[in-house]
Length: 509
Image (tube, rainbow, N blue to C red; front, side):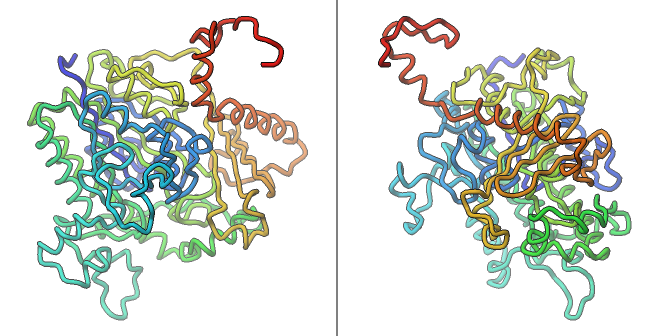
């Protein structure tokens, strides 16, 4: 067991599917360094995010709380200033807590006057994290680096442009980016992460290394753009019947999100191949980090978590991007390597227990001996890492989606206050409930690929009612009660144990 406090390396990709790991026998993509990480840790196969949009999903990871509790349901909607994030927890514990890469955190102008959008002020801290190197797509540090390497204004204006010959008939994702592999954003953020470890020295540290890729645009530097043969790309998970009787959200989503090109075989084959190349590029650079950590005495004293903020369809269900509640968007890769001897019994195993993004923060706090906090709604995964399964472990996962910020209210004729969706998924069914639109139900035993909506079949009416009530109970059980204890614990005669009987209270209370 390490003698000094555990460091934490929290690695997140953007828009990476759960199935894109060669350790899970993906037919194309190769991820040898992540496979090795899984061999030394635990791979959680049933890991789900609580929102499939970058900002709200990340706020769930950062706070250990569901989207309706964080009150940050969309990109650029500020995380309220009273929310406590993993950066705050680790800073208070004496760690050096930093961000390298993407965050999508927006500070709250109600508590931070400098956070006004028109101010143009760059913050030194983001969600309690030192902004070691910020890159929400095209970070200033990366652009300055490209300029120093001699790239011109055309590349700096569009660092994801590709070298596509005039009149070329292939999809643009077939061509290499104008930025070379050694200067890509993935390479640069990896360099900066290693720089942070050097700079931190012997100080306990928490580093959130957050890659922008394989997020759109699906373009890659050479040789990753041609690493995989498009002919080997597996066919999308979809059937024509999905378009013949679509959910009301489906068709405008395809149109507005430009999923129609994925109807063409040449497009989905190429984009899938390039998407896999981007994942292998990340894996290659993770190998650099892991080798550095092993060479400098960090490997046996660092808790490592690898995951993604959500998935990507790449043509599945006739769509691209990540919205709606299909597994391709919500199920994410999730690996934890706990270096402590207590985890030796589970190394190299695959766990099929349901875990959620809100579990990451309480796992960090538990592993590092920092306790927990009432507002946190997730559960520590440390018992699972140590080979123990709590008797009350969850049997389902949930998600909460506020889509009023889309084009949907106008195209669907649904008022903004009704643009909400909830999801519950267990091993038997997946149920989507919308406010103002039809329900969706998948019988996962008969239809594990979620291709046939059976919500309108009479024989499933009882299932619909059961899962609708289950969603209501979940929502009621996870309201934001973060301030209740402030009053509860200060009232004379009340104990801190919520299960204790309170004293007699006057009837007007």
